[in-house]
Image (cartoon, rainbow, N blue to C red; front, side):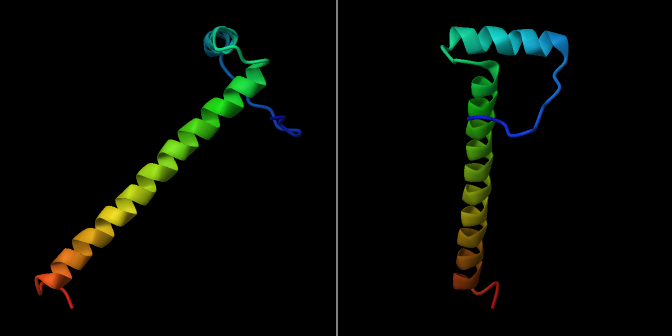
Length: 70
């Protein structure tokens, strides 16, 4: 994945950790590693948000079924 005209600034200690992780993970570049890490984290956040919305809907259905809500 290529960033089109976008750059992200990282503190030097973090950048060094990212470089080491990218190399250890077999990524072809730091950009590829960062893109993968961001995509993975976003997927986790989106799944958690979706699970939360489904849980809320289930609670509302239960409350309606018990007559607490119309």
